[in-house]
Structures are given as structure tokens and as C-alpha cells.
Length: 386
Ligand SMILES: [Zn+2]
Image 1 (cartoon, rainbow, N blue to C red):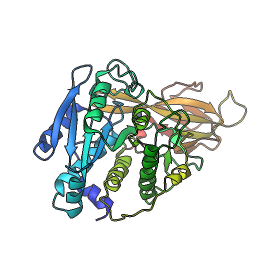
Image 2 (cartoon, rainbow, N blue to C red):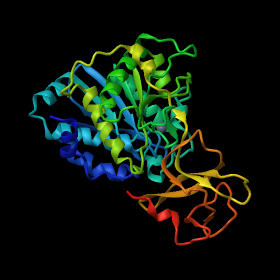
Image 3 (cartoon, rainbow, N blue to C red):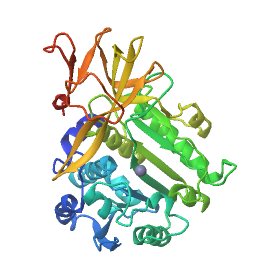
């Protein structure tokens, strides 16, 4: 069966958008408690529960964790899509095989406090992905305890990346991977080779859907990062970065590709036998910070003698139970080396931003229109379509 159909039939519709917290996942976990082994493995700084789901009883042990960074929820949504797929299709031969082959342990939200307030860090303002050496935070200890207990043969470190990453070709980084280094010399250790080879398989599957939009992260070693540490322990670890494309600010498109990756990873696939060598890992393009959310091109401003570009980034602000995307001026000048998820060419016009001629970096934007013809609108903060 095609991946896309599997996705449509099994998407966990109770989870959507960017704001995903314990509050959202607890009812779903409750629903699966007779299907899978679900346990509370510890508490966060603010004494919120951290959950572990075990799927399958096989000998291949895989440990994944999502929302180590509280505001990075796309992989959490994909995990629940995958779980729903497994639960709904237990009679399928390939699902039975998966359940007999793998023990997949997954922590859906490692940082529930950060998730609740939509921050990267935990309640002590510590980035848990810089705490692998010190283990100063309860969430870090919970992860390390599970790692020690289940002794995984493969780890999946699941994250989101910002919308600023693309490639030299001008394509956006919709999914990026990293086989973290195990030492400062970036030696290709046995465990790194395994991670790299897995990434090559996953990336080649994705190329069919999003050609040129799959890449790899810079592999500078940092012992404070969890992936680097686990790799140093000799356990192959793959970092997943769910990225951005066009108007997918709710990351529902990327979510689908992550579901595909999970299917591919656990060999629930109609395309078995992709041959892969770890060396092809280096053929994946490296992420570059060359993207903006929006670029206005060919803008005339009185303070510049020639047309310039204006770069706009959305700030993610939690309001109530929704993440709002607030556009701000991020750069003014020559942006010829940058691409954007939305490009607007104003063809040499003078513009007004919020009815002002003077603009500066950091200004929040409501409306951009033509100076001479105010009915000509180039950008409206309410125009973001989801
Ligand atoms: Zn992250």
C-alpha cells in the first residue's frame, strides 16, 4: 500500500498545529493503554509526567524521544500517526513482522514543561540538548535512565528546525538529518556508519517525494549534545530535523514525510532493498542558513539610492492554546544570496509599512502597501493561510 494512503487513513487527527502538550497526548495515551505498554518514567522540573510508550516485543531495540525542545512538536505528531497506523493494522503481515522484530520505545514529550509554555528550554531555562554531560535536569536523567535500561541498538533524536534553513540550490530544507560525531575528530566510528547508512536509506526514500529538499546538519562534535554522547557510547543515533516548506507553518506537510520515514525505518515498505552505503551520506547537501519566511524584493526606500530587499521572519508567540505567527522585519538590504518561503516583488515601488515610511529592523508588521496607491497591498499580517 502506498505511504500516502497509509498516512491519510491513519493520521492522528486529535493532534494538529504547533502547540502539542501533555494535555493533548494524555487522552490518546489512555486510548492505547491496552494496546501498548505505556508507563510514566519520571517527572519534569514542574512535576509533570514524562511518558514512555513501548511498541512491539522484538529483539531490535530502538529508543526515540521527541520534544526534548518543548516547542518542536512535528515529530510528536508523526509518532502518534505511526502508532495509530500500527494499532489499526495489526492484522497486516508487515505490521506483525514489525511487532515481532522491534521493541520501539518512544518518549513522546521529554520536556513537558517547555511544551506547555512553548519554549525550547525546560522550566529551569536549560536546553536539554546541552545537558548530556552534566545531567543537571530531571528530564536529562529520565532519558539517560531509559537509555541505560533498554540498551537501544538505535536512537532517534527527534526535533524541528527553524524555517531559515535551505540548500545552495535554493531549495528549502524540509527534512534534515545528522549522524552526530562521536569525537572531536569526527571519526566515522562503527555506530556512526550505521546511523549514516540508515540516513541514506531514509533520504533516498524521501527524494522521491521532496527531491532536493533533504539534507544533513553540520557535524561539529559537542559532548553536551545527547546524540553526540550516545554515539560516543557506541549506539548509532540519528538526529531528525523536521523543517519547513512554503506556507506550512503548522508543519502538517512535514509531518506526513516524517510518518513516511518512520514507515521506511521500520521496514513497512513497498520499496524494500534500497541499497545504501554510508559514504553516500556525504552526498546529501549540508544545511545553510539562506532562507527567510518572506522577502520583498525591488523595494524603494528613501534612505537607499537603489532598490533593496526586506526580509521578514515570523516570531512564534503562544496565545491561549494557539501559536501565533507574528511577522517582523529581520533584514533590510541586499538579500540576493537568500531565498524565501514567500517572495513578493514590488517592482521598484515605494512602500509604506504600517502606514509609515520609516522602517527599522525588529518592527512588527501589520500591513505593507504601495506609497502612491494605498489600495495596492503587498503583505497583510492576516494573510498567512493555514
Ligand atoms: Zn531541537
